[in-house]
Amino acid sequence: MKLLVGVLLCSLVLGVSSQRWWTFLKEAGQGTRDMWRAYSDMREANYKNSDKYFHARGNYDAARRGPGGAWAAKVISDARENSQRITDRLKFGDSGHGAEDSKADQAANKWGRSGKDPNHFRPAGLPSKY
Image (cartoon, rainbow, N blue to C red; front, top):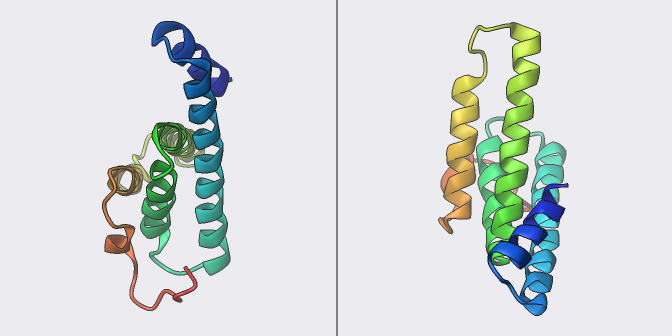
């Protein structure tokens, strides 16, 4: 649904030509795959204190695709953090549990999307495969 809204916004409001919105959609799809690959690698690695690295790497890779990839990375990152906020509230009530971690995740997401090196968050000992 958000993808459809994005396409409509780009084509109607911003006056993006059909060729440019096709490029935007292609970049968004590639960025989505980059985010999924980072998530899959994080699950596979199962390495302590590595989540910020994978957040930054997924956003970095997606944003390098272009505006569509950066858009997809932001939408996915925000959706993930918002859904985590809801589930934390259901599990822990209004305790604020996870709020600090969510802020740190969002900082890593922004770091990666801005083009900064995701290795800044890489924990010592993480296998070079990642």
